[in-house]
Length: 479
Image (cartoon, rainbow, N blue to C red; front, top):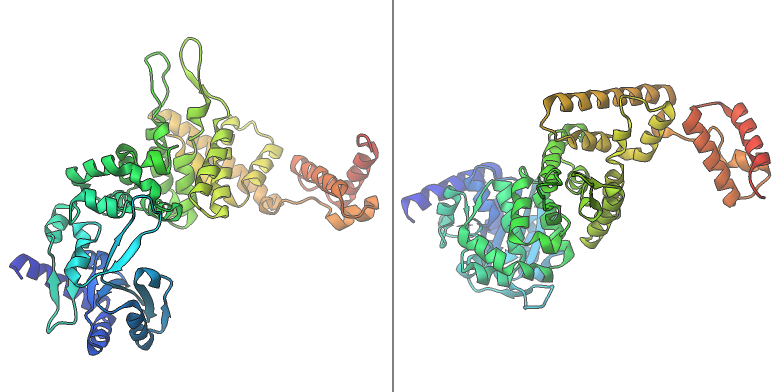
């Protein structure tokens, strides 16, 4: 071990002892059964960077069932959901470990599921990993801990470079998802992708289509939730990956001619994302829904763009078209229904504030704004404020002030009327008793009438609501 490796190994060992004292006891359990165990991958990288957490990754020559048996004796809880891929996990105290058998994983040319073959030694295992900075290991079952770095990951770590341990074409052919991981690590760690690696990604980007939507989604989420998603998203677009996994984003790069000027919609969307992130304290920290909505809120513009005679461009109803496109894309990426519907709602509502003018909305309009946003009202506040990307400081301050006034009005009405719990002054049972109805479409129509009355006039009390209901029932259209 040379001096550089020795220093890195000592740093990793010290970090491991300080942050994860249970790792050595786990290593002793494997050693006592005749197996090896090494801290590996991102855990070693993070240990060297001084940012090791309590989620540790290990590799071993023990087969998965053997690892499971050892973990069952060592850990408080064990789960084997990844055992088909050679991984068994366990938790002891506040430390979570994943132990994976040495392996070689690759895709067939047209398969969506990787084949897993168990390897014979740790060097073979490290050669199959995504990047050199993740191809370092700390062997814990020898006479003393040994730092292993066959692909110069330490050097690349120091240079903040993403390089593959083998030829990048071979690496990305074996597992195309590694191309998205490159964008993710660039965003998470502020690393540069080596030129030869980027060339390979651009060449092999169509191969990402064989990876399952769920795995693509998970990597996309990690990029979006990283400290600097601009880096990763730009890499996805420039490499051609986005054209396959989320094509609505590169399509935001609309052509601009000299006669019909408009904002660079892609750059605007990234800026809105960054400005939304800056306000996430209002949402109690990093929030996937607001980041998705900020990035996708204008994806309806390419389909709705039309040129105005004499210059200029319009995007009529792009919020409606964009809401539909956002929901469809997120569904195809297998996002959960709550996330799909939340992003759809925010995209559909993101222009509503611009009808507020200088505060001309009636209380009825303010109530409808709150009603339509529902539980996403704070998200809508964040998105609407983030959507102001003008460089005109006076205009930006004016828009911010106008929105301040809207929030003030909402807060006042909230106190007066409990807007977050808007409901008619009569419930369904009372409506059925007053109109002598059984559960039916007519009851629903009556409740809709009462809700509109509530939104228009605020709380009017049961006596007046009853009179209004009976009058509406008597004078409604064809029976």
